[in-house]
Length: 402
Image 1 (cartoon, rainbow, N blue to C red):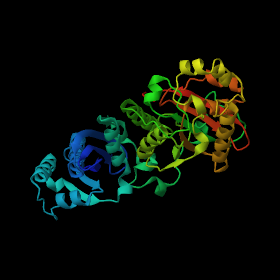
Image 2: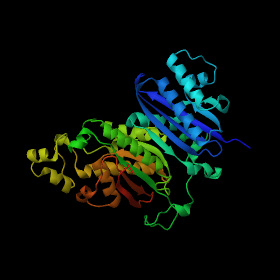
Image 3: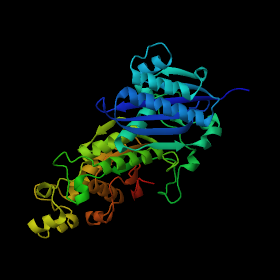
Protein backbone atom coordinates (compact mmCIF):
# COMPACT_ATOMS: atom_id res chain seq x y z
CA UNK A 1 0.00 0.00 0.00
CA UNK A 2 1.38 3.44 -0.95
CA UNK A 3 2.20 5.56 2.07
CA UNK A 4 0.80 9.01 2.29
CA UNK A 5 3.17 11.95 1.81
CA UNK A 6 2.98 15.15 3.84
CA UNK A 7 4.93 18.41 3.71
CA UNK A 8 5.78 20.38 6.85
CA UNK A 9 6.69 24.06 6.49
CA UNK A 10 8.12 25.55 9.68
CA UNK A 11 9.77 28.75 10.85
CA UNK A 12 10.56 30.73 13.96
CA UNK A 13 11.86 34.15 14.87
CA UNK A 14 13.05 36.36 17.69
CA UNK A 15 12.83 40.12 17.79
CA UNK A 16 16.16 40.77 19.46
CA UNK A 17 17.81 37.32 19.47
CA UNK A 18 17.18 36.76 22.29
CA UNK A 19 13.95 38.67 22.48
CA UNK A 20 10.19 38.14 22.11
CA UNK A 21 10.00 34.97 20.05
CA UNK A 22 7.42 32.87 18.24
CA UNK A 23 7.15 29.95 15.87
CA UNK A 24 4.83 28.84 13.10
CA UNK A 25 4.25 25.60 11.23
CA UNK A 26 1.80 24.10 8.78
CA UNK A 27 1.20 20.71 7.19
CA UNK A 28 0.25 20.22 3.55
CA UNK A 29 -0.90 17.19 1.64
CA UNK A 30 1.99 16.58 -0.77
CA UNK A 31 -0.33 15.43 -3.57
CA UNK A 32 -2.81 18.30 -3.58
CA UNK A 33 -0.87 21.00 -1.76
CA UNK A 34 -3.83 21.68 0.53
CA UNK A 35 -3.05 22.95 4.01
CA UNK A 36 -4.29 20.41 6.55
CA UNK A 37 -3.11 22.03 9.78
CA UNK A 38 -1.67 25.32 11.01
CA UNK A 39 0.12 25.87 14.30
CA UNK A 40 1.80 28.86 15.96
CA UNK A 41 3.02 29.67 19.44
CA UNK A 42 4.57 32.45 21.50
CA UNK A 43 7.70 31.56 23.49
CA UNK A 44 8.40 34.69 25.50
CA UNK A 45 12.08 35.65 25.39
CA UNK A 46 14.09 33.14 23.34
CA UNK A 47 16.61 32.91 20.50
CA UNK A 48 15.98 32.44 16.79
CA UNK A 49 17.32 28.89 16.94
CA UNK A 50 15.03 27.87 19.79
CA UNK A 51 12.06 29.38 17.93
CA UNK A 52 12.96 27.58 14.68
CA UNK A 53 13.29 24.21 16.41
CA UNK A 54 10.03 24.83 18.27
CA UNK A 55 8.28 25.36 14.93
CA UNK A 56 9.83 22.19 13.54
CA UNK A 57 8.73 20.08 16.50
CA UNK A 58 5.19 21.46 16.37
CA UNK A 59 4.99 20.80 12.62
CA UNK A 60 6.18 17.23 13.00
CA UNK A 61 3.70 16.63 15.82
CA UNK A 62 0.88 17.99 13.66
CA UNK A 63 1.94 15.70 10.81
CA UNK A 64 2.04 12.71 13.15
CA UNK A 65 -1.49 13.50 14.35
CA UNK A 66 -2.69 13.47 10.73
CA UNK A 67 -0.95 10.21 9.77
CA UNK A 68 1.76 8.62 11.95
CA UNK A 69 2.83 6.39 9.04
CA UNK A 70 3.21 9.18 6.47
CA UNK A 71 6.45 10.07 4.74
CA UNK A 72 7.20 13.68 5.69
CA UNK A 73 9.28 16.29 3.90
CA UNK A 74 10.23 19.26 6.08
CA UNK A 75 10.87 22.56 4.31
CA UNK A 76 12.58 25.35 6.25
CA UNK A 77 14.61 28.45 5.44
CA UNK A 78 16.96 27.77 8.37
CA UNK A 79 20.11 26.22 6.91
CA UNK A 80 21.27 25.42 10.45
CA UNK A 81 18.19 23.36 11.35
CA UNK A 82 18.08 21.55 8.00
CA UNK A 83 21.78 20.60 8.10
CA UNK A 84 21.72 19.59 11.76
CA UNK A 85 18.57 17.49 11.43
CA UNK A 86 19.99 15.88 8.29
CA UNK A 87 23.08 14.87 10.28
CA UNK A 88 25.55 16.85 8.18
CA UNK A 89 26.38 19.49 10.80
CA UNK A 90 27.30 18.93 14.42
CA UNK A 91 25.13 20.16 17.26
CA UNK A 92 27.47 21.69 19.83
CA UNK A 93 25.15 23.53 22.20
CA UNK A 94 23.53 21.38 24.88
CA UNK A 95 20.16 23.13 24.65
CA UNK A 96 20.14 22.64 20.89
CA UNK A 97 20.98 18.94 21.29
CA UNK A 98 17.93 18.53 23.50
CA UNK A 99 15.75 20.16 20.86
CA UNK A 100 17.26 18.00 18.11
CA UNK A 101 16.57 14.86 20.14
CA UNK A 102 13.02 16.03 20.80
CA UNK A 103 12.43 16.61 17.08
CA UNK A 104 13.88 13.23 16.11
CA UNK A 105 11.67 11.49 18.65
CA UNK A 106 8.43 12.69 17.07
CA UNK A 107 8.66 10.41 14.01
CA UNK A 108 11.10 7.67 13.01
CA UNK A 109 14.06 9.32 11.23
CA UNK A 110 13.58 7.20 8.10
CA UNK A 111 10.14 8.79 7.58
CA UNK A 112 11.44 12.36 7.51
CA UNK A 113 13.58 14.27 5.00
CA UNK A 114 14.71 17.89 5.18
CA UNK A 115 14.86 20.50 2.41
CA UNK A 116 16.22 24.03 2.65
CA UNK A 117 14.13 26.71 0.88
CA UNK A 118 14.59 30.42 0.40
CA UNK A 119 12.91 32.63 2.98
CA UNK A 120 10.48 34.02 0.41
CA UNK A 121 9.27 30.48 -0.22
CA UNK A 122 8.50 29.91 3.45
CA UNK A 123 6.21 32.93 3.77
CA UNK A 124 3.17 31.24 5.28
CA UNK A 125 5.09 29.65 8.17
CA UNK A 126 6.87 32.97 8.71
CA UNK A 127 3.51 34.75 8.81
CA UNK A 128 2.25 32.34 11.46
CA UNK A 129 5.38 32.95 13.58
CA UNK A 130 4.94 36.71 13.29
CA UNK A 131 1.26 36.41 14.17
CA UNK A 132 2.25 34.62 17.37
CA UNK A 133 4.76 37.37 18.19
CA UNK A 134 2.25 40.12 17.34
CA UNK A 135 -0.56 38.68 19.46
CA UNK A 136 1.52 36.76 22.03
CA UNK A 137 -0.96 33.95 21.53
CA UNK A 138 -1.07 30.58 19.82
CA UNK A 139 -2.80 29.32 16.69
CA UNK A 140 -4.27 25.85 16.19
CA UNK A 141 -6.30 25.37 13.03
CA UNK A 142 -7.12 22.07 11.33
CA UNK A 143 -8.58 21.70 7.86
CA UNK A 144 -9.51 18.03 7.57
CA UNK A 145 -11.99 18.65 4.76
CA UNK A 146 -9.08 19.53 2.49
CA UNK A 147 -7.59 16.06 2.82
CA UNK A 148 -9.87 14.44 0.25
CA UNK A 149 -10.12 17.35 -2.18
CA UNK A 150 -9.03 16.52 -5.72
CA UNK A 151 -5.85 18.07 -7.05
CA UNK A 152 -7.88 20.16 -9.52
CA UNK A 153 -9.22 22.18 -6.61
CA UNK A 154 -5.84 23.05 -5.10
CA UNK A 155 -5.52 26.66 -3.99
CA UNK A 156 -3.15 28.69 -6.11
CA UNK A 157 -0.92 29.48 -3.16
CA UNK A 158 -0.54 25.87 -2.08
CA UNK A 159 2.20 24.87 -4.49
CA UNK A 160 5.55 23.61 -3.35
CA UNK A 161 6.76 26.65 -1.44
CA UNK A 162 6.01 29.17 -4.19
CA UNK A 163 5.68 32.91 -3.64
CA UNK A 164 2.68 35.04 -4.57
CA UNK A 165 4.72 36.80 -7.26
CA UNK A 166 5.64 33.48 -8.88
CA UNK A 167 2.08 32.28 -8.95
CA UNK A 168 0.58 35.27 -10.74
CA UNK A 169 -3.16 36.04 -10.41
CA UNK A 170 -5.12 33.67 -8.19
CA UNK A 171 -7.66 31.46 -9.92
CA UNK A 172 -11.27 32.51 -9.54
CA UNK A 173 -14.60 30.70 -9.42
CA UNK A 174 -16.49 30.52 -12.72
CA UNK A 175 -18.09 33.78 -13.84
CA UNK A 176 -21.58 32.58 -12.97
CA UNK A 177 -20.50 32.48 -9.29
CA UNK A 178 -18.91 35.89 -9.28
CA UNK A 179 -21.95 38.12 -9.05
CA UNK A 180 -23.42 37.83 -5.56
CA UNK A 181 -27.13 38.26 -4.99
CA UNK A 182 -28.01 41.90 -4.45
CA UNK A 183 -24.76 43.27 -5.93
CA UNK A 184 -24.60 46.20 -8.30
CA UNK A 185 -26.63 45.22 -11.37
CA UNK A 186 -24.77 45.13 -14.69
CA UNK A 187 -25.64 43.55 -17.99
CA UNK A 188 -22.10 42.75 -19.09
CA UNK A 189 -19.13 40.78 -17.78
CA UNK A 190 -16.93 43.73 -16.81
CA UNK A 191 -15.25 43.25 -13.44
CA UNK A 192 -14.43 46.06 -10.97
CA UNK A 193 -11.57 46.93 -8.70
CA UNK A 194 -12.44 45.62 -5.24
CA UNK A 195 -10.99 47.72 -2.42
CA UNK A 196 -10.91 46.22 1.07
CA UNK A 197 -10.70 49.23 3.38
CA UNK A 198 -9.33 48.17 6.75
CA UNK A 199 -9.21 50.58 9.66
CA UNK A 200 -6.10 50.31 11.83
CA UNK A 201 -6.20 48.60 15.21
CA UNK A 202 -6.64 50.35 18.53
CA UNK A 203 -4.21 53.03 19.76
CA UNK A 204 -4.16 54.87 23.08
CA UNK A 205 -5.91 57.78 21.40
CA UNK A 206 -8.55 55.51 19.89
CA UNK A 207 -9.35 54.23 23.38
CA UNK A 208 -9.55 57.77 24.82
CA UNK A 209 -11.67 58.97 21.85
CA UNK A 210 -9.18 61.73 21.08
CA UNK A 211 -8.87 63.11 17.55
CA UNK A 212 -5.79 61.51 16.02
CA UNK A 213 -5.06 62.85 12.56
CA UNK A 214 -2.35 62.93 9.92
CA UNK A 215 -0.27 65.86 11.16
CA UNK A 216 1.82 63.60 13.43
CA UNK A 217 3.06 60.08 12.63
CA UNK A 218 2.03 58.42 15.89
CA UNK A 219 0.70 56.89 17.98
CA UNK A 220 1.36 53.20 17.42
CA UNK A 221 -0.89 50.25 18.20
CA UNK A 222 -1.61 49.10 21.73
CA UNK A 223 -1.28 45.43 22.67
CA UNK A 224 -5.00 45.07 21.93
CA UNK A 225 -4.47 46.86 18.64
CA UNK A 226 -1.76 44.38 17.64
CA UNK A 227 -4.14 41.53 18.38
CA UNK A 228 -6.83 43.24 16.30
CA UNK A 229 -4.34 43.64 13.44
CA UNK A 230 -3.55 39.92 13.49
CA UNK A 231 -7.27 39.05 13.53
CA UNK A 232 -7.85 41.45 10.65
CA UNK A 233 -5.02 39.82 8.71
CA UNK A 234 -6.70 36.44 9.14
CA UNK A 235 -10.01 37.76 7.82
CA UNK A 236 -8.39 39.53 4.87
CA UNK A 237 -6.56 36.31 4.01
CA UNK A 238 -9.96 34.61 3.67
CA UNK A 239 -11.21 37.18 1.14
CA UNK A 240 -11.65 35.42 -2.20
CA UNK A 241 -11.66 32.09 -0.43
CA UNK A 242 -14.46 31.21 2.00
CA UNK A 243 -15.26 34.91 2.66
CA UNK A 244 -16.62 36.77 -0.41
CA UNK A 245 -15.44 33.98 -2.74
CA UNK A 246 -16.83 35.86 -5.76
CA UNK A 247 -14.02 38.47 -5.64
CA UNK A 248 -10.33 38.06 -6.52
CA UNK A 249 -7.95 37.30 -3.69
CA UNK A 250 -5.96 40.33 -2.50
CA UNK A 251 -2.90 41.06 -4.62
CA UNK A 252 -1.78 44.41 -3.19
CA UNK A 253 -1.57 46.02 0.27
CA UNK A 254 -1.53 49.81 0.63
CA UNK A 255 -1.22 51.78 3.87
CA UNK A 256 -1.57 55.38 4.91
CA UNK A 257 1.75 56.84 6.15
CA UNK A 258 0.74 56.80 9.83
CA UNK A 259 2.50 54.43 12.26
CA UNK A 260 -0.74 52.74 13.31
CA UNK A 261 -1.81 51.97 9.74
CA UNK A 262 1.63 50.76 8.72
CA UNK A 263 1.79 48.42 11.71
CA UNK A 264 -1.65 47.03 10.85
CA UNK A 265 -0.72 46.71 7.17
CA UNK A 266 2.50 44.87 8.02
CA UNK A 267 0.46 42.20 9.84
CA UNK A 268 -1.76 41.87 6.76
CA UNK A 269 1.20 41.78 4.40
CA UNK A 270 2.89 39.02 6.38
CA UNK A 271 -0.28 36.93 6.33
CA UNK A 272 -0.74 37.40 2.58
CA UNK A 273 2.94 37.22 1.68
CA UNK A 274 2.72 40.66 0.04
CA UNK A 275 4.79 43.85 0.42
CA UNK A 276 3.21 47.02 1.79
CA UNK A 277 3.23 50.29 -0.16
CA UNK A 278 2.39 53.68 1.31
CA UNK A 279 -0.04 56.22 -0.18
CA UNK A 280 -0.75 59.53 1.56
CA UNK A 281 -4.08 59.79 -0.27
CA UNK A 282 -5.50 57.42 2.35
CA UNK A 283 -4.16 59.29 5.40
CA UNK A 284 -6.51 60.42 8.14
CA UNK A 285 -7.92 63.92 8.12
CA UNK A 286 -5.54 66.63 9.31
CA UNK A 287 -7.22 67.91 12.47
CA UNK A 288 -4.87 70.88 12.82
CA UNK A 289 -5.22 72.54 16.23
CA UNK A 290 -7.60 69.79 17.35
CA UNK A 291 -4.92 67.08 17.17
CA UNK A 292 -4.91 64.98 20.35
CA UNK A 293 -8.02 66.59 21.84
CA UNK A 294 -11.29 64.90 22.73
CA UNK A 295 -14.63 66.13 21.41
CA UNK A 296 -15.41 67.80 24.76
CA UNK A 297 -12.07 69.61 24.75
CA UNK A 298 -12.62 70.84 21.19
CA UNK A 299 -16.08 72.13 22.14
CA UNK A 300 -14.60 74.14 25.02
CA UNK A 301 -11.97 75.78 22.80
CA UNK A 302 -14.06 76.15 19.63
CA UNK A 303 -17.76 76.10 20.55
CA UNK A 304 -19.87 74.67 17.73
CA UNK A 305 -16.91 74.23 15.37
CA UNK A 306 -16.74 70.45 15.54
CA UNK A 307 -20.38 70.09 14.51
CA UNK A 308 -19.81 72.51 11.64
CA UNK A 309 -16.79 70.48 10.52
CA UNK A 310 -18.95 67.35 10.30
CA UNK A 311 -21.93 69.12 8.68
CA UNK A 312 -20.39 71.68 6.34
CA UNK A 313 -18.36 70.28 3.46
CA UNK A 314 -15.82 73.10 3.18
CA UNK A 315 -15.48 74.00 6.88
CA UNK A 316 -11.88 73.16 7.82
CA UNK A 317 -10.48 72.26 11.20
CA UNK A 318 -8.28 75.18 12.39
CA UNK A 319 -5.03 74.71 10.49
CA UNK A 320 -6.29 71.40 9.10
CA UNK A 321 -8.60 69.90 6.47
CA UNK A 322 -12.27 70.06 5.64
CA UNK A 323 -14.39 67.04 4.74
CA UNK A 324 -14.30 68.02 1.09
CA UNK A 325 -10.48 68.11 1.27
CA UNK A 326 -10.39 64.56 2.64
CA UNK A 327 -12.91 63.35 0.08
CA UNK A 328 -10.95 64.84 -2.81
CA UNK A 329 -7.69 63.07 -1.99
CA UNK A 330 -9.38 59.76 -1.12
CA UNK A 331 -11.24 59.93 -4.45
CA UNK A 332 -7.93 60.61 -6.23
CA UNK A 333 -6.34 57.61 -4.48
CA UNK A 334 -9.17 55.29 -5.51
CA UNK A 335 -9.10 56.59 -9.07
CA UNK A 336 -5.36 55.85 -9.27
CA UNK A 337 -5.98 52.29 -8.13
CA UNK A 338 -8.65 51.86 -10.80
CA UNK A 339 -6.28 53.24 -13.44
CA UNK A 340 -3.69 50.65 -12.38
CA UNK A 341 -6.14 47.85 -13.21
CA UNK A 342 -9.52 46.37 -12.39
CA UNK A 343 -10.52 42.72 -11.84
CA UNK A 344 -8.33 42.56 -8.74
CA UNK A 345 -8.55 43.19 -4.99
CA UNK A 346 -6.46 45.78 -3.14
CA UNK A 347 -6.30 46.07 0.65
CA UNK A 348 -6.08 49.68 1.85
CA UNK A 349 -5.31 50.19 5.54
CA UNK A 350 -6.65 53.59 6.52
CA UNK A 351 -8.58 55.58 9.14
CA UNK A 352 -12.13 56.29 10.23
CA UNK A 353 -12.71 59.63 8.48
CA UNK A 354 -10.87 58.54 5.33
CA UNK A 355 -12.89 55.31 5.10
CA UNK A 356 -16.14 57.23 5.65
CA UNK A 357 -15.03 59.51 2.84
CA UNK A 358 -14.42 56.50 0.59
CA UNK A 359 -17.94 55.25 1.28
CA UNK A 360 -19.43 58.71 0.76
CA UNK A 361 -17.56 59.28 -2.50
CA UNK A 362 -18.55 55.83 -3.74
CA UNK A 363 -22.24 56.47 -3.04
CA UNK A 364 -22.13 60.11 -4.09
CA UNK A 365 -23.78 61.32 -0.88
CA UNK A 366 -23.22 64.72 0.81
CA UNK A 367 -20.40 64.99 3.35
CA UNK A 368 -22.95 65.67 6.11
CA UNK A 369 -24.03 62.01 5.80
CA UNK A 370 -20.52 60.56 6.09
CA UNK A 371 -20.60 60.66 9.89
CA UNK A 372 -23.48 58.18 9.82
CA UNK A 373 -21.08 55.41 8.80
CA UNK A 374 -19.69 53.42 11.72
CA UNK A 375 -16.04 52.41 11.23
CA UNK A 376 -14.75 50.62 14.34
CA UNK A 377 -11.06 49.86 14.89
CA UNK A 378 -9.85 46.96 12.70
CA UNK A 379 -13.17 46.75 10.85
CA UNK A 380 -13.51 46.00 7.13
CA UNK A 381 -15.38 48.08 4.56
CA UNK A 382 -15.49 47.07 0.89
CA UNK A 383 -16.13 49.33 -2.09
CA UNK A 384 -16.01 48.30 -5.76
CA UNK A 385 -15.23 50.64 -8.65
CA UNK A 386 -15.64 49.80 -12.34
CA UNK A 387 -13.51 51.34 -15.05
CA UNK A 388 -16.57 53.03 -16.59
CA UNK A 389 -17.39 54.90 -13.36
CA UNK A 390 -19.99 52.54 -11.87
CA UNK A 391 -19.56 51.92 -8.13
CA UNK A 392 -20.99 49.95 -5.24
CA UNK A 393 -20.54 49.62 -1.50
CA UNK A 394 -20.47 45.93 -0.59
CA UNK A 395 -19.64 45.93 3.13
CA UNK A 396 -19.45 48.63 5.81
CA UNK A 397 -17.73 48.31 9.18
CA UNK A 398 -17.60 44.53 9.44
CA UNK A 399 -15.71 43.42 12.57
CA UNK A 400 -12.69 41.22 11.91
CA UNK A 401 -12.90 38.94 14.96
CA UNK A 402 -15.39 36.63 13.16
